[in-house]
Image (cartoon, rainbow, N blue to C red; front, side):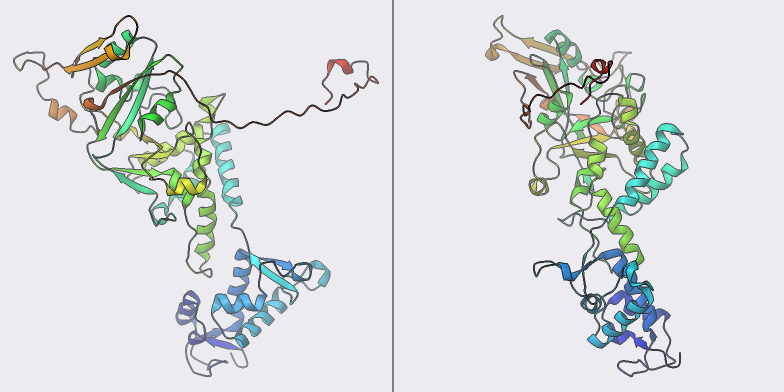
Length: 465
């Protein structure tokens, strides 16, 4: 390395680069700056690292066309700040960048120039977004089952999800326990139907049996999952009952701690603070930019073909449900049926409020929901004028005679694997008296009349505007 400019680890403050010099450098020559014989690397190698940082994190603009209010720094200032080096070191690195990476012809556009300022580049999720679209196309047009490209994409997307943190230093994976209540709602046209279903509430207000399970946003046809909400109001809003409907809301409590991936928490993820010289950092930042929009992608309303529209969300839910790495019991996300709040309000809100919770099939079983288990006596007292004071619904557990040969002898064994318990003391009845909508309005402007073109004799058959 005779005659080559080198820099030692002691002359660089940036920790990642300092450790790289220690691990990969040489002690053959003394440092060109402090003149000590410490582990060092050629300044050209440091310039290569610095160029990648400019490529990934900075946007060069011609400073001659900007005012004093524009935000940005010179290339030398960026080098000094990112590497933590003295001015003479920054000058040498800048000279290397200028000579090695600028095009030969000035007209081709310079990358490094004294006339340029360098502002922070916005982290783009374009690459991952394109992979997302490719995955959707593959699922729709090629194959759903044993789709290796889809699995590869999801493996990479979720590989380090537990290491991400929100702006409150929280993990997007949370644990809910017995103190949590998850609510399910059902609407009925008549009180007679209400009475019938309340006779077996564990069976009728939990997830349907597999042969009755219809496809939904997070489950395929025949796969029974638990769709619940963290408040009764959201549970009611999600089923969109008509005015005049009778609604029963049933609360369920987990019988064990459940691990839930909170998709809405991804909106508040913070970008990595790791070294910009670490090649993995830019990948993490791009993934963060994508994940911050992920909950919106999964909760967009589907109006027409639900089977096709829900395909991608069903696949993701299925992937997460079988993942041995995460051991998840379900996912949660902000309801689209309740009033939208600003981002700042969303982040101030308690995470357990205002969410939908979907428990995967393996964690959606309800105690005493079997065909021959628990029945209740139901009474719905009402007068002819429907006076609310005379309407007093009650349910009473019918206890089995221990000597009845038809009684189930081992209920505990049968229910050991059930993750949920219906809290019958919290079942509520609602009568839907009105519905409110959150909406935006835009006036349709009345423009000036326009003349129909008559040069084509068939023009009247077509709409020309």
